[in-house]
Structure formats: C-alpha cells, structure tokens
Length: 182
Ligand code: ADP
Image (cartoon, rainbow, N blue to C red):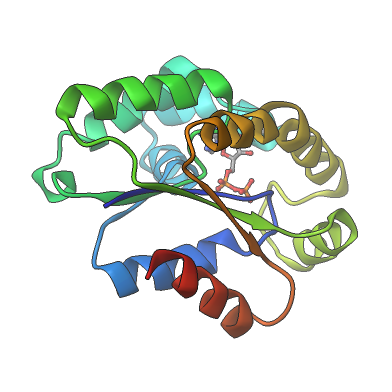
C-alpha cells in the first residue's frame, strides 16, 4: 500500500507516521529525514539543501525528486511505503503520480492531519530543532498554505484524500488514523 501523509509542520506527523508504518508493516519515507541525513553525511545533496532548510524554504524539486526516485528503487519499497513530508507542492505530486503509475503501483490513499494554526505554533516553539525559530516557523506555515494545501485539492480530485482531526492526545489522533486505514 502506497500512502501519502500530509500535514502542516507541527501537526505531529513524525510521531503518527512512525506508529502507522509499524501498524501497516511498510517502510517510512520522510524527505525531511533523508535531507537531514544527507546534511549530516556531508554529501553534495546535503550541502545544496541545507540553506533552504535553515530558511524554512522548500528544497528545489529537482533535488527532492532525485532522492525520491533513488529511494523508490529499493526492493523493500516494491509493495508500498508511507511518504511523509512529500509531495509538498503540486509539481512534486504530479511527478510522484507519474513515477508510481509507471511502476503499476498507484497511490492508495492520502491522509491529511488537520491542526489549527495557534496550536501548530505552540507545538513548534516547544520543539528544539535548529529550523524551529519563530521566523522559520511562520515561513514554513506560509509555504504550507501556499504550496502544500493545493496538493490536498489535487488528491481530493482523484478521490484519494482522507482528513483526520489532529487535535487531542497522540493516542486519540492515532485511533482516528487507524480507522481511516482499516
Ligand atoms: P516539518 O514537517 O516539521 O516542516 P520536515 O522534516 O518534513 O519537517 O521538513 C523540514 C524541511 O526540509 C522543510 O522545511 C524543507 O526545507 C525540507 N523539505 C522536506 N521535504 C521536502 C519536500 N518534499 N520538498 C521540498 N523541501 C522539503
């Protein structure tokens, strides 16, 4: 099963994604994690991506699609995976549609976690990641509204979108996610 997991920064996606891949037994593909790994490995990709990430901007599609294309060659992903933090704009979504359709394994479902913006800012300021400063947070939320929210419409048009309320305890949220996938 190929699932896309979408939600604004601070929606608790990372925690929920981990539980969901454990439940479904599929690999977790987080572009944020892959990019952070590239930075800590000191690769060329990491060097190119880091300034964008520090500024809370999207890393260019060409770089992100490169890592996704490479990741999808892994035989462990033959039957499915959970995409987390990808696609983040409509061009990335169309590219992913193309990649998966060419393999004969189209997306099965897109899960959106919804959390209101005051709560998001509160949660993000409580974390300690280097790109969680007040300036980058507000920029990342803006990028989400402008670039990522249209991806939801793209998938709603394909009848793939399911929306989950992300407020409440992590356990509450996971119960809701479970109901969507079962
Ligand atoms: P969050 O959801 O909290 O913003 P992520 O780990 O998903 O955290 O992303 C962190 C940063 O990595 C983003 O702000 C962006 O700079 C970069 N990034 C991650 N995924 C993508 C993507 N699909 N396209 C472009 N940039 C990305």
